[in-house]
Image (cartoon, rainbow, N blue to C red):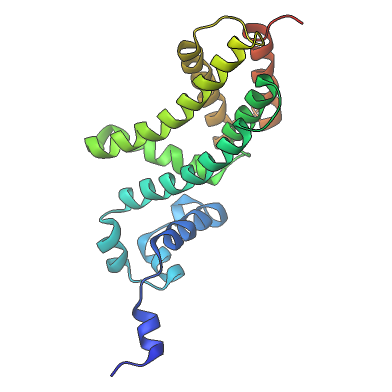
Length: 203
């Protein structure tokens, strides 16, 4: 008969705990240190056991990104439904979108997943598109609200959102990789200036 201690050692942790541990390792040690063996040691599982659940490291990374995006989605929903002007909430959206700084763990993971996406299966690419789609839909809704209230110029919300997110992605990548001259504060200033010039109606 196995002992209670042995049963505990042989019981896999909840999948969310594994994903949280993977993100914590990326934040603390960098993506290059995240191996199946290292993650297994962190959560008390063998690398073979992790592969049984996730099938590949690419799948582990995508699932971790989806888990992280789920948490960001909750935060984004809270910010976008709070009281205040559409512009105030748009600034909050931008603030959440732009990386915290060089080697931001969420953006480090995002870049790695998208770097592999050109060779990914259709199912994985659909899941990546779903992540982007959630950000896009929320931004379109916020822009449409601002237009209807007269806070924003009468832009096409979908087209403007596509262009704004392309701008944000470009700046965000520069921040995440630590490109000189594009620190977070400077990037936020550029984006707010762009919004003032292209979107906000004159007072």
